[in-house]
Image (cartoon, rainbow, N blue to C red):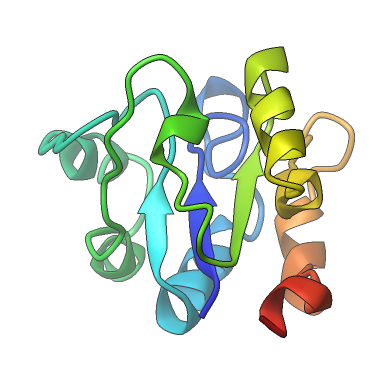
Length: 140
């Protein structure tokens, strides 16, 4: 099974903390079909306030799915929280050079899915239409 790692800002929340287009559908889909984890600066451990914060932006139906997303624990780099022994996709708008190097070392750079809502506000909808799973990673 493929793990899904999600950033919040720039991925699920667009500018001014407005939910990204298709964020509700995207969240429901990934949580219903994959083990899903937060990989965001808003949640670097067991952050119990995250659901309260996101509840301001998402409807209660979506919050039922959001509450099922598990936190990750990391300190300096988000890649500290990734389980490289399992297949994964990481949806994030920004990748630091150290994180890029670590992904390259594990031959998993293609598992980082760059989300740029400034260039394409419909990105999450496009992901839903053709979910980007690296097939060679899933065959393991």
